[in-house]
Image (tube, rainbow, N blue to C red; front, side):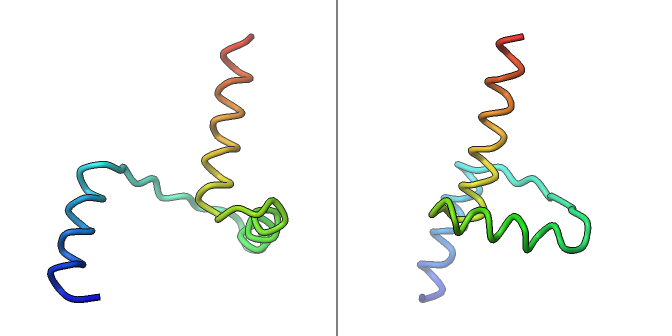
Amino acid sequence: MGKSATKAKNKYNAANYERINLVVQKGCKAVIQDAAAQAGQSVNAFINAAIAEKIEKEQKK
């Protein structure tokens, strides 16, 4: 990928996404990666779905 394409991608990402730094205990990363793979999702998609599910569940209380 060229420098201008990378710059454009980074600009788009900065305008449309926010980052959250997630820290997990040693060994937990592999468990999450395996679970995501079994679900046919990326780790990011898997974590986002888990968060959305938890928020929905909590809002119904």
